[in-house]
Length: 278
Length: 283
Image 1: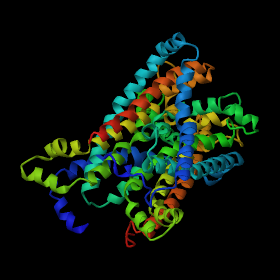
Image 2: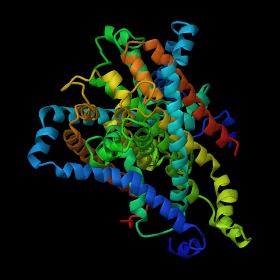
Image 3: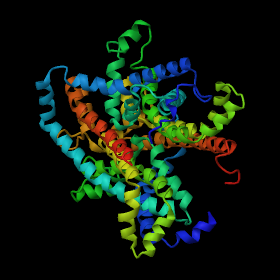
Image 4: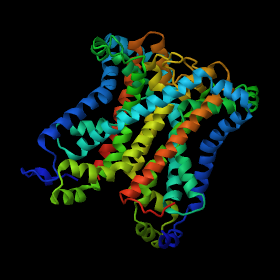
């Protein structure tokens, strides 16, 4: 992958003039610094503004810990659902032709075009106290909205196509002859999937899981609607951060937010490391 | 396509994979969206217009539309710039820029909004010098556009990097050898080839921007008629237990964004055909 072709000192006809090159690099770095790096830096600096004791206090607060636990519960449901669906979608859409395939492919893009707030609204309309089904469930002591199931459902809806969108092109680029060789040598469909197909799309799978994890852990709009913001019970980490901020505790909000910045940085580091090994 | 079809049937697993996919799509995509449409259809026409087309709602759609379009117009060239520099040049810090480019998408939207809000208030690091110049960013439509541009940048860069690293190199060389200037090569050879990918990135930015809530509410100020985006108005109506009004506004917003996405998809297909990336015959 390393390109050593550009080490020649002479300029090639497709190279940009050095002045243009320098100007474009400067402009790109300025854009990167102001819009992409600045927010993360502000959070990390803001988190420690009042010292490490204040930081530790904000992190170890019982409602922060409860929020972290709820976020982990949401991930424990949302990510496996995403992976199973993503593999199913990639296996069928990338490798078979069937009636309704274009419609299915188009449907996968729909959640990306829907506002998170609308995603939350859907579950209020279906399971809220003012809906017949919701009223019945509440009467039977299994509330969905303002409880964990609603938060999980809204998160699954928002992140639904993430793994599928990474896996479909990866599956499509695999050589069918490899699959056929495995099948002719007597592999079952499951063996083919687990031993041959998934290892070859490892980078796409990991990148899809990382994207889905970041979004599921950070979802705000959809979750805000179905959560009801009950501190210690239905607050996820982003909701807890927002309520700290709205209560005037900016440093506390940034302290808890710095945890999610760390998670984001880790999720970004994993896929590139993995992909560059290939 | 056709010669492959019979060979693909040799693969097992279609019934299981397809039932997982179809069930998932039905439960988590079709049913939720149908719920919105059915609820909206139950409202009388007069009530729909009264709640979804009143002056406050119209101001909110306009703000969402204008900020999402401005952010798309900013993120597309800036994203192209970043993608170009990352793929074509070698410079110190390139790997860092490349690795962190997805940060706005990986960060929770609320955290992005809080951080940008803190930085660009009149007392913030970046807001104070700008305020001295008379430019107020936080709590204005400009702040909303800024947040949406940050969110859109990685989407544009990710759409462009694959084609920038592979496709136009040989044709660019041919163009240069035949005597075209660097600028002519860029506008006549490179740009047409990457336009479909650029439009894909633009469509993703627009779709994300027009519905965005988390990163916007902390920098917008949220004043009805001035800095209240449509998703925030939906949220307000839900909190007032007015599900009907929320659904009517949601339906209108969905219609607007799907219509614009359809237009972008048409442009994209047109550009792909013109660049010779896709055959003219498909659909």
